[in-house]
Image (cartoon, helix red, strand yellow):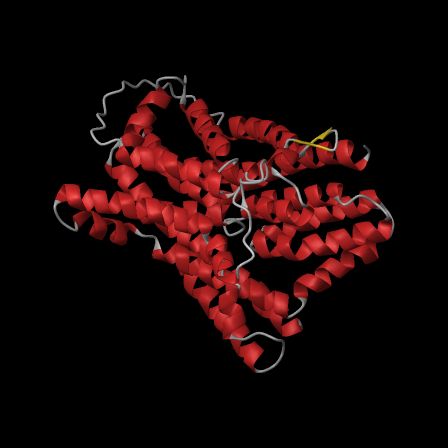
Length: 436
């Protein structure tokens, strides 16, 4: 276990220090974990490592990148920018309104897809106002992560909780006669809104803009809307029992995005009478982000196989004993810290049965602990640039556009945003579900 811990810590230290090399560091670490597996330090091989990769997420990201490329080419982001800027008094409110817009979308669509959809508008606003796009896209990313826990379709972790606890879509709003986790997330969003207003308080330059951009092709915009609706729709599909259909079911979000992307590409190529749109999309595909996520999934499988996640979970009960409030506080706090450095999907998947077992030993209902786990794990990703896929995606977009993003740039927004949202949301959940 100790060698795995050393490799894991070293991996994340290097990724934080050498951000330009993060994909190769993650892939190299995955190779080291595989080597230790074949040396029989713990049960891991190539098949289990590849099986741990969330291909649905990767496929969805890649396909949405293609859709976003067509969306940008249609010039709709510029028009949306002009419409937004017409309705806000200054830069501070422009950035805050855009972050709120991203949050609303991400309550119903995966966070990464949200960032890919809204980022072009953020870049266009930054260019129009002649400000750095770095804090704008960071604000979009952290707001997307926050709202992912609001509904059952907002994030993969929410889907995991819904499936494990037998919750339906409406249970996130109202459950067993009590308001659900949705309202805690929204209270956290209000707190984080105040944080954004404080962070951008000096950006008081007035905004003046006319709607001038003409959008001749609205089909890419319709595809973006269709993506949102289809991602919501497929989340309600019942899980099939047939193993072949189950594999397709697990890729349903990614395949939905891919289908719409292919429709858009085929139409664009026919309209252009050539393969130029396809070549442009392939050129703009953010391969580094995809490689980074691919490597991270295998790294997390390595620490799981080495027993690090199970060992950390076992400590919870030892420390909390039969004190529910202490266990709740530990779950929220530790989940925030761990999710700042590791992907929250395997963490939540591992911790759900552990939380259920501890709640059973205490003789308590597990829901308050489930909600605390989800709150900490979802929002904790906002603490660091590599804590959530949405953050990685936003930084990848910025780098693709020639921007330099330092860890300090991210922490300046991510840390106060996270602390405000977690504190307010966690207190709400305990008051409603821990004392109810």
